[in-house]
Image 1: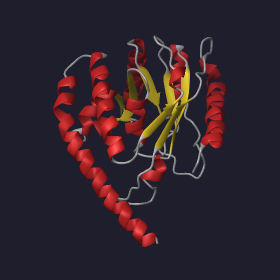
Image 2: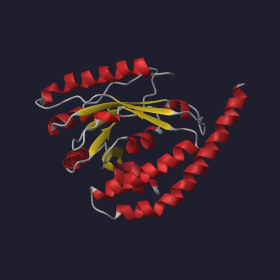
Image 3: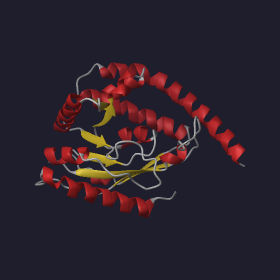
Image 4: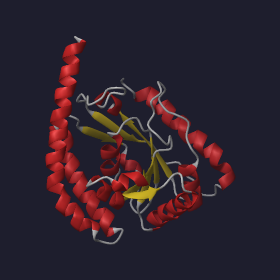
Length: 249
């Protein structure tokens, strides 16, 4: 019955794309108005719109998002939120799904995409990974975001995990940021997005619910840059073990 699944996956992909385009067009003008504001108001209002948008869009495409562990976010405390990365579906889940005002880190190329670029410029710190000056500037801007009371959402695997393992090895960046800023890290895990956008399939998708879980925070107070390896390994093992206990794939 693979042929039937292939047809269903492509029909659903067309349906999902049409719903996305229609809802995006509704959101363009409010988001553009929001883009004219200074931070952190700009990001706060953008997230208000994005959360409303995703609360409508995700159930309509039969991919409801269920969150667990929101109580780990304490009022008045900013965090570096680290998350696994399996699919393009992770972004519309994580950005509106993390409680409070937040930004993420995005490739500068994303800012050039029509319509999407505007949203990335509001909700992200942009970086040209091939340019050392841009990388240094992105670190400064992430620190500024934390200082303004915004969480930073980072994917420490760097790129999407296309392996058969729960996680790829982590880069140091997220953990150095947390140590330098002396803010806690909240590990988080997104489940099932790879079931929606199936790896290796072109213009193919299938509906599935999504789970987004937050783990208890990991403190960084008193840690120094030489502790980054220990911190990174601790968070990696927390996420690896939790994934093994809760994954239903």
